[in-house]
Image (cartoon, rainbow, N blue to C red; front, side, top):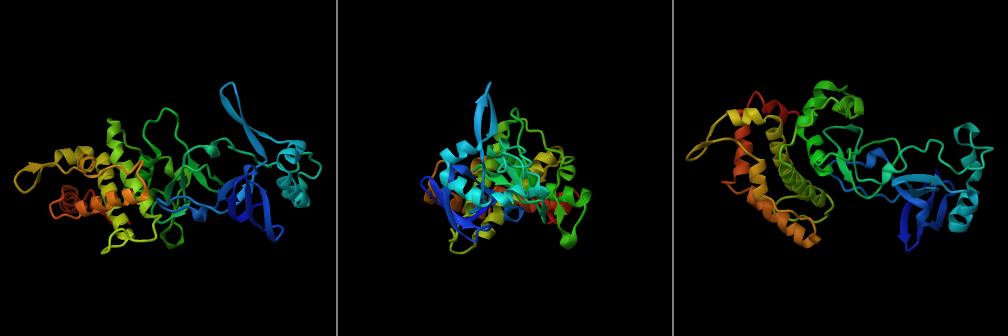
Length: 335
């Protein structure tokens, strides 16, 4: 509905280009919501958009339940005179949506299919529907979307969205999709609910085990926002790939816990089990609450530690390919 593009928010107003009028306009920022398309959703990418859509609804609570209600025309005029003027200019176009469905409707500016208006406000997992490898990321900016899927947790689920993003972006999930979903041209797959619903989610016995997943997701998402490399010798993309390999190692441990525990590996001086989650708790510090400079320093030190010759996580990733050739290697090579 009456999209506005290339927008800049200035105080209580938003300035942007109207496709319909083919010119720049200014309207009240309280009348719009950020919106994006599916091709703007990428793996671990912080969601940003300069596109907004007019949202002629307001939120209210009734019996502790939040609801969305449509403004009437008089309230729109009083509260958003500039936005109402723009809607009036677009009135003919708005009335003729769905073959003139709103032609004689007093609420000609309403959404024809107003679904889940409250849920868009919640933190959620966003996914690129057509993807080569998972394209899941986090929306904590109340972005609205059209024609894409998003996921909301049930209130009783303790694990964070970041933890689930790591699982869904993992090679384990990709291996599952490649063996159960329908392939498209170019080796891409469609991540629709009917394909994702059968994917088994591991049971977490200790909620503290999810913390290193969240920390590494924070590392990766910050790295993907940076234009300058944090290490003079390697690219941010390479560092991201290294941390994703660690995430995959932790995911393997969740899904193949019994297999990991049943196999003793000869290390330098003693035998033991391949582990990732326990070591990740020790090696990776949270960047939550840090400014960008401090966070980059923590990430840089974490990467250097990972690449040390005797780093346990680094060496366990190598040992996976040696001791679990039939179990893990096919998954590792799936992407």
